[in-house]
Image (tube, rainbow over all chains, first blue to last red; front, side, top):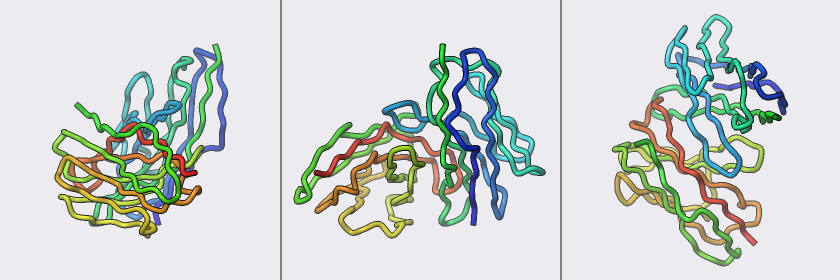
Length: 113
Length: 113
């Protein structure tokens, strides 16, 4: 079945540091890939998505490229801010009658001033 | 507008109570979802409604009863819950029941005493 593997956390960075959060996936078909962010006490917000190989999703300075050859969708940001502190979930979705999102375990990012 | 609203924000109930969670979206989406999220874990899918019909029930105990009165509303009726049911309950919607982006509400924090 489908699965998503995220790097182990938590991650703590200083403000303005470079961020990479790894995400790899296993899927039988051609999934869409998503990054969701959850700020403390809130629901999930879509951060970015990519629907096919080599697509790059971007939003709020975050980027991720759909790499079919390495089955990866790593999240990057050039300069993190304290306000980026949150939990980040990588997810994949495949179509079909019983389509649903498969989430990774999530990783907590803390950014210190 | 990509807003999904949920009420109440917080709910405390005893094991013999009956309560309901409500979710609303006005994006014209035809698929709506209930998720359960425990602390520091990814959301777990409970139910999917597609065009107001229940299409997925992830073997959820009968003490949780979903209802979709119309295309904009989704309810989750709760009865005889257990303390282990305490969690954040998230509602989401997407344009269709395919691999479209799911938009999440802020959640209802449920505590069962």
